[in-house]
Amino acid sequence: MGLRTGKEFIAGLNDGRQVYANGGLIRDVTQDEAFGGVCRELAKLYDLQHDAQIGPAITCRSPNASAYTCSLMQAHDWPSMEHRVRGERMRADAVNGMMGRLPDFVNAVMTDFASAQALFGRNDPAFGRHITEYFELCRDRDLCLTHALVDPQIDRRRGVEAQEALRIVKETDAGLIVSGARMLATLAPVADEILIAPFSNRKPGEGDFTIVFAIPVATAGLKLVCRETYDRGYSDYDRPLTTRYDEGDALAVFDQVLVPWERVFAARDIETYNLIRVAVPGYLWLNATIRATAKLSFMTGLAALVAETIGRTELQRYQEILGELVANVELAEGLVTAGAHQLLDNLQNSGARAGGLSPDDGAKRVGGSHGTLNRGLVSLTAARMFFPAAHQRAVEAIRYLGSSGLVMTPSERDFDNPELQATLARHFKGQAVSARDRVRIMKMAWDAISGDFGGRQLLYEFFYAGDPFNNRLLYFGSRRYKECLDRAQHALASFSPHDR
Image 1: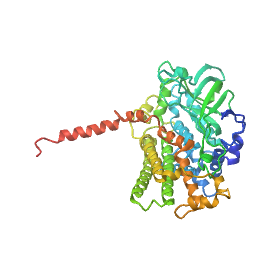
Image 2: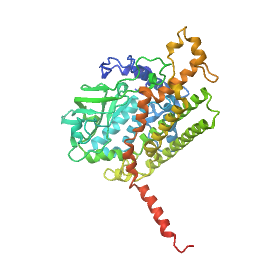
Image 3: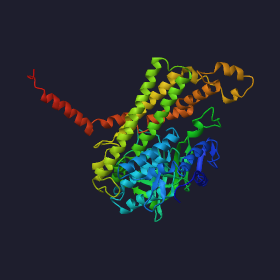
Image 4: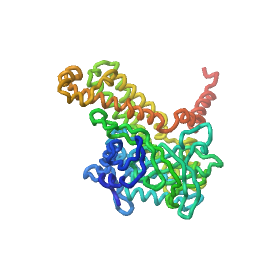
């Protein structure tokens, strides 16, 4: 198929999928007011691939000479890494970093998996072939993927069996029969396929819950139960971000679903399942850093726009706040560069490139992206530690800079009311901007930090890379912790009491 257009992407979504939202079955997600906006935004991204100027920057050529998205490119040197980063940055910038699960993200996951294909085949070579073949399918058909990693949240005191989690029911000649649920499938209502992948480790005795696979969203027996959607027919003026970027989050419920063997990448292999998360070189975390940097830049610009609109940039107290945000953007840009170099180093020196991972101990040597931290991975640390705090700080700054102006915003219909136009023009104008434009700016700021959409954004960024408490614990006892401790002990030992 090759690179798809936006029209082709939209047409592919009308496939009989079972998407439930707001009390009913959505017959056509592309025409529904809750999902139409995000469909259009994704279609624009697909159309960019065919733009004469932008297309070459965000696409590349496969071994069979067909064009494909660079978010599925396996980098082998710095020029190819730069190409990949540039393409991912351009797509993240196109949505202002506000869509955390652009197709680029799971594409990065699939690139990671393809780079560690020998691990998937360590006990059964067929699974290694399956992951490679599926990666090529995603590349050649230009698919939009979502993923579901987490077991349902029922009773966290108990094990996976109490969570009504996705499990293997039985094996057949045609494939595996699975039932149960996984969450949090962001973008699932408008994705082509869903990837089921690891997040939490499985324990002995949990083999039936240990499975990695990918199937079309329209597969029989799979239904998506969405959270309440945030776009309720708002105008672009009143909710400019909600109407474009509400990706949708869903619980994926499987009822006796057949997963063909060629779509199974791991099954009932607890050791391999637990190693997958630490065997990847880190494409997904570099992508996360690129996307978060685009969002932080947008949020910083939005804070500055709010301050400029109401004349607050002349005061040092506000200049200091904006200066701090800009400094965080500078740090974020540096993290992108450092993350790209470190990923390339991981690929070239760790043995994690495609076909190069030792099936038995390669993952343990390479590992660290989620737990052991036996190697440096700056992009993962950025996602865990820097960006959640930086994003929260940007939200606080916008709240402080906009203050009551964020709340006092008439609707677009009020501006269209002849009885109010003169009053609004007089009392809602800003510093060198009209009342309509000032309110429009404040509405965008409100949409970014508050209400349904903004509140979800804050929570999403806070837990983007997992529980912050657990994330911090992972660094205790890591190689870096030991290095720091050894340094202090060495200094203490070298300082003789008789030096002075």
